[in-house]
Image (cartoon, rainbow, N blue to C red):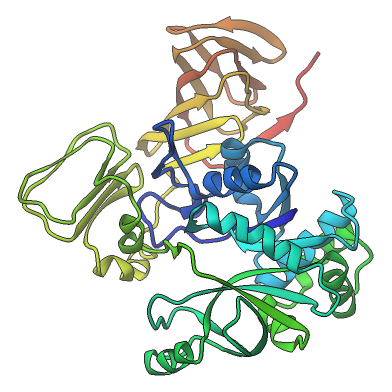
Length: 438
């Protein structure tokens, strides 16, 4: 099974745990069978592989998310990088070309496309495999998965099938109706359009070539910024006559707000938190190493991270976005391919960061023009390289790098470092990367 996971999101609605780099699909908030927390993308990847271990999984995403994906999933996963945001048709066309030209997937194989961030259970992943099989049909070019509605939502478009069988030809679509029209659609057997569909690779690639002048994946990637911004639904789905839909009645939730997210949490408190016995339907999600105490709160969410603190009525949390957009500050937490960093102090001419390197990982060999750096090793062992000179490091060691000196660090075990950046111009663009000198 070939699967394209669409990974987007600006990280506004689940602030302060999410930001412009760390969208909701990367927040580790769901406890697995081993008692460890995992993110939506980790759950999605794990369960696709559980149902079909031979699945080829490709994530269509922005460059800013690549390090986080590698950190959470590993580097075996395929990634189709969108040079800029152009909506779902260009993203899916690019990912489809990636499968054919980079992964060498045959034109007659089927491809399943789905969002990376719904909350689903194992039955959903078995349905994806069934959808992939349906896409092998000689009579239909597109196969959709329609979600059985649980209420007349205004958030989703609707798929109206010709009949109420498990698999039916699509009669028509209704784009995000009001509640009254949504009720009438549901009475006709309409299904939510969750953006889940399957096709033969050749089908989308042929349409992409008709709509876009390109030779192959690399050519399409280079022309990406010139492409029209258009959704897959408008470009293909609503124009296709040979289209069928498969009903899915299992669990499927769009966890796009704190209100909906907390409904799916297994516990009321994640991190350091205490609730009095007078609290009702209140959730604490705390990434800070300080306790949060809630007294007598009802229907509230309290979320804390290095980015900030949210205290909100659950229903009102759905309207957070315009307020968060007014907050302008540096990214305070990010996952990288080698580990993660968290800003712990920010001054006018200094930045102090807690850096965590995963075992057997290393930073890029790099230098800075406008800042000095001081590393204090607080736990673990590894090797530091400064201007080609290698030194074994352990807890208590201090390494100083003046501006212009090339440096990196290689973790043997998990390595924790306090990094202090000193300079009048501290910014992410002040970085030059090099190959490690042998």
